[in-house]
Every structure is written in C-alpha cells, then in structure tokens.
Length: 246
Image (cartoon, rainbow, N blue to C red; front, side):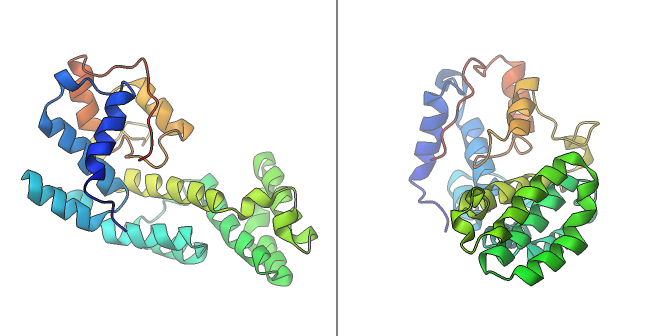
C-alpha cells in the first residue's frame, strides 16, 4: 500500500532533524527529488504519479518503466516465493545473480527456509543438495549452510537456535538487497562507477549503502545527482548520517 501523502512532510522532517539536510540551503526542487526518489525506490506507483502531478516535476520514465516488474519481484521475495522472485529477476536483469553470488545464495536460502517452515524435510534436503551444496566450497557459505541445515534438526524450527532465519526481518533483509541490486543493474552506465556500484557524491554515502544502513530508505543510486549538487556546494552536513524510517 502506498504511504499517506501526509507522510511526505514527515520524511523531510526526519532528514532535517537528523542533520542530513540544511533547510536554509535547500530549495523545494531538491526536497522534491528526495521524496520522489524514496517513493520510486519503494515502488509506490500511485504516490509517484500523484506527487509528480502535484509538484509539476518531470516524470522519470527511465525509472518508472520497470517499477511494476520490480514491485512484483519485491513482493514475491517478501512473501517467501523466492524461486519466482529469481525467475522474474533473471528476466528483468539477466546475469545479475551470476555476478552476485551472495544475493543468489540468500534467495535460494529463502526457499530452503520456507520448505523447513512447512516441515518438508525431504524436499528441503534435496533442494540443499542440488542448489545450495555447490556454495559449500567457500567457507563463508559453509558456515551459513550449517545454520540453515540446523532448522531441519528440530520438530519445531521456530524454537531452534537459528529461529531468526524464519523471521520476516530476514526476508526483508534479503528483499532489500535484491531491490538495491536490481536498481543498480538497471541504471544507465553513466550513473555507475567503474566498479559497477552506484556513483555517489562521496565515500560516506557509498559506505552507508554498503553497510546496509540505508535499508528501507531511498538508495543513493537514485540520489547521485542530488548528492553531487549538494556536496559540490557544501550543503550536506556529514556530521550525522543517521536517518529514520518513517
């Protein structure tokens, strides 16, 4: 469901109170850019259209054209239908998972978790052997595999020491990572750095994105131009990067 339009003011208030913005140095257009980026990132289609109509902004067709597809992928992953999310992702952004093995592993793990939740132990084991075991060649994946397999050792997986893997928070974390990856993959080459990451206006922005601290907020890949403009004019306060999710 799209957010109440009244929340736009709350979004900006949070940015201001965090020290992220200097009200006296930012004009309405720049504030509109932030709000629009937040709405696009979270696939709030109706709110994007309403906000553009109310503000008279130019419709960013290059971002909107894949929003519906991305939104469907987002919901599939969030609802635990990881295999469908993978299928749709490969259609929208081919090779994205081949280039991001961590994300591919997490998505496959979501499917394994759903099988464990439904107590489909045999199916879960078969899936682990065919899809997850190839990742076991690397130590970082082996440790995670052990945690996932531990779910099958309990009649009630939600009471296991790794019960957090069954949580909606874990699904949300993986879904957010997928959303950011798709956004980065679908940007124009000019908006990406040489390493393929979003081109941001400063190391601090990219560090926050890499650390996951931006989850639930507009990704810096949408705000690249906005950041460069503000940083170039010393308009961003970098002393406090904390942000609240309204």
